[in-house]
Structure formats: structure tokens, C-alpha cells
Length: 342
Image (cartoon, rainbow, N blue to C red):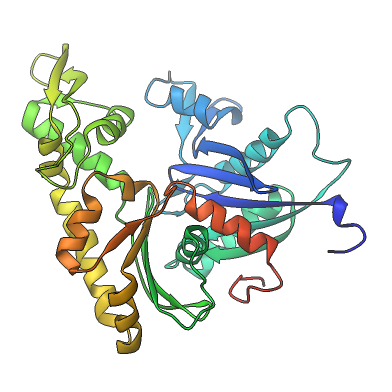
């Protein structure tokens, strides 16, 4: 670091479809939902993160809630920029970090991202005040966050199930040997639950309620050793239009999620087929590592293990593994050649 390094603020950002995390000085300083609430009349931001999340699905016609990222990439450029800017301000509310700090950012991106989508992430960060922007692929960040030595000549398979994308990658010698990125992940689990409630119980539930069902009684298996208690779901009856309550069990949710989980399993098998034989031998020994919020779905590790006949390990803190890996990469910018800088 140079003489004027104290004038540079270094931040690592996990810009996720569902949540955005910012790490500074090895501490998670921002952990907020990736959502913005705007005033339609003057396009002014009303709320960002948790406050905007509370408004989601409950707004009147003058306020709209926007999720700037869809399927792991920026869908609304302006809102994404406003969200990044607002979250950076949350680091040190009421004052600037330094008199006029120069921001250096490392942002993680899906491995299947296009050049145009990459440009959108970079531009959003630069407009939000970054002087230097580095990009890192999510599976690589997840591997570093889990504690894998990515520069070793040893094959490791990482599965990062986020909100918008599932990233499956085989990593060796500081690079991604083969990867599979599918736009099926946690958001699809939630929409499956919404669809199931409508079809099976004639009850209309919102996105937030579906997310809550997934957290409380979500499961990948119809039979669990330690099953969660049944969950009371409230929504609108499609026949009468009157609010009503029903009780949902974990096995019902497992049935609702079955098709989407099968697609993730197919992608994992496809990635294993593409893996060179020497790395396949390593993966047989080390197993599969899982990170991301989607990996917390009850029984998902057991289901993938049964399908692949390989041991499956879930990261210690799956929600923050990618952010922590991004932070470690930030501290070792000179060492890691795989960081994208152009």
C-alpha cells in the first residue's frame, strides 16, 4: 500500500439478487435486501434495503418498490446505482468516510455473465463513486470464503445457490476450469411456493409471505429427521376474496419445490460431466462445497449427495461466504490474478 493509502477506502461488495453485503476492514458493515422504494412523481429514492423491503407489496400508486437485480445481473441501471450509493452511505451515516475518500471496490459477479452485463456492474459502481473497480466470479469468491486454497493444483467443486442464479464451478490453480451458471435459484423456490398455494389451496400469497414459508418450512425432502413445525399461512381466498389462514407442512413445500431442485441437480450432473478426469478424481476425494442462501434449504445437501453419490459440505456461514471471499480477494489484489480489471 502506498503513502496515501489512508485516503483510499477499500470495500468488498456482494451484489446479490436478494441481498447486498458490504465488507470493510474485515467487518460486514451493510447487510440489506437488494431493493429500492421510489417516489414515482419525482423519481426520488424513499427507502433502501430493509425499509424498502417492509414496503414491498404494500405500496400505494405513488410509491413503487424496485429490485434492481434480476437473475444475478443489473436489470435497472439507475436503481442499482442509487442502491449502491445509498448502501455506501450506510457505512458511515451522517458523514463521509474520510474527507474525500477514493473508493476501491471488489464486486462479485455470476460466472455466466455477459460482457454487457459486466459493463453495467462496473458503470454502476463508478457512478456510485468508485475510482477502482475489480470484479470476481461468485464461485471463486465462495471458494475463498469457505477457506479453500484456490491456487493449489487440486480440484474443488463449488455450488453457490443465490437469489437469482445457481453457480456451479470446478476450481483449480486459481481459475475456473469448467462452470455452469443457471438462472434458477432462491427466487424460483419462492415463486414455486406462490404457485403451489394458488393451485393447491386456492389462496393468493405475496412474494414476502412465500419467502417466509420457504424459511420456516422449506425442504428439499419429503421426510426429514428433525422436521420443522407446521406453519400458518395467511393470504386471500381466490374463491371468496376474503382473507383466510391455512396450515402448511414441510412435506407440502418439498413437493412444490421438487421440479426446480431437479433442474439444479441436472446442472450439477452436467458440470460433473464436463470436468476433466484428474479433477474428477480430486472431487471424489474432497466432495462438493455449497454456499449461498439457497444451500440452507433443509435436506438439500442430502438430496444432492444422494444424486451425485458424493459427500456434500455446507459452508459455515453460507449467506456470507461469497462476501467474505470477496473481502479476502480485496486484501490480496496483487496476489490474485483472476480478479478482472480492465
